Amino acid sequence: MMSQLDQAQETEDVTPLDQRPSWQRRLVVLVTESTAFIFVALLAMLLVFVVLRPEAFATVNNLRNIAIAASILLVISVGQTFVITTAGIDISVGSVLVISGVSASLMMAQVGGGAGWASVAVGVGAALATGLFFGLLNGLLITKAKLPPLIVTLGSFGGVLGLAKVMTGGINLRTVPPELVNTLGIGRLFGFVPWLVIIALLITTAAGVTLRYTRFGRYTVAIGSSEEAARRVGINVDRHLLKVYSLSGLLAGMAGIMSLARFSNTTIQGHDTDNLQSIAAVVIGGTSLFGGIGTMFGTLVGVFIPTTLQNGFVILRIQPFWQEVAVGVVLIAAVYVDQWKRRARDRL
Image 1 (cartoon, rainbow, N blue to C red):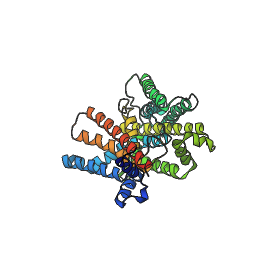
Image 2 (image 1 turned 60 degrees about the vertical axis):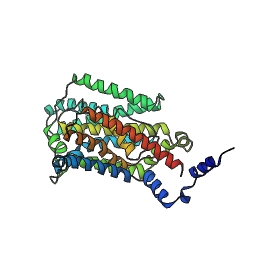
Image 3 (image 1 turned 135 degrees about the vertical axis):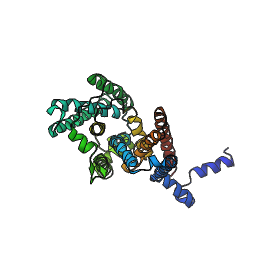
Image 4 (image 1 turned 90 degrees about the vertical axis):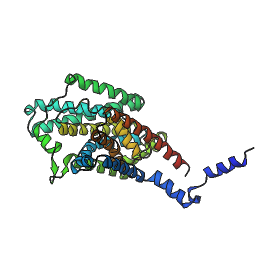
C-alpha cells in the first residue's frame, strides 16, 4: 500500500500548472518558455571579465571583435538550429567551413590571379557550392542509407577536414583578393558596424522568420516532435531532412567565405571546436537537443556565451587549452539544462 508520503509526493508532482502558486507558475514559464536566464548568465560573464580587466575588455574595439567572432559562429549555428530542431545533429560544420574556404581560395587563385571582383564572385560561389555539396551528402546518407546523423556527421567531421589538408598539403592558403578582405573582412557600414555582423544578423533574421512563420519551419518542428506522426500527416520526411542538412552545409560554406575574408587565409586549424560551440550555443539558446523546439533568437543570444568565454580567456592570458575545456563544460551544462527544462515542461 502506498504510504501517505508517497501519495503526497505523487499529488505534488502531477499538480496542474494553473493550480500551483503564482511564484511557481512564473518560475516554470520563465525557465521553459523564455531566454531570460541566458541574458542573466551572459551579463554575469561580461561583468566578471569587465571587473577583472576593464581597460582591455570593456572597450568598443574589443566588443566589436566579440561581435565579429560571434558572427561567423552564428551563421553555422543557424543551420545547426534547424538540424537540432529535427532531433538531428551536425558535427561536421567546422570541417565544412574549412574546406569551403579552401575551395574558395583555390578557385580565386585560378581567376584573375586571386584579385578583382570576378575572383571574389568565383570564390563565393565555390564556397557555397562546396558547403551545399557536403550538406547534401550528409543528408543523403542519413535519409537514404538510414545512418544515424551522429555517425554520418562525425565521419564527415574527420573525413572532410582530412580532405582539406590533402588539398592544401596541411598549410594555410593565403590567396584572398584584397577586395574581399577590405569589404567583407574589415569593412564597416557607416564606419562603425562590421559587414560580417550585418550579414550574420540578416541571415539569422531570415532564418527566424522561416522557422516560425513558414511551412518549412512548421515541418522542421513537426519532424523533431515526432517523425512518425509527421509521416502520417503527409510530410515527406526524407526530402525535408535532405533540405535541412543541405541548408546547414550551405550556411557552413557561407561561414567559410566569411572566415576567409576576416583572417585572409584558410585557418585550417582554427575551427576545431566550432562544432561543439555551435551545438552548445543552440542548446543554451533554448532549442531542445531532443527536437521539436527551436528558437533563432535564443541561438543568437547563446552564441555569445562561448564567444565571450574565448575572448575573455585571451584577455586574461589563460592558456588556450582551457578554452576547449570551458566549451566542453558549457556543452554539458547546456544538455543538462535542456533535460531539466524538458522534465519541467512534461509536468505542465
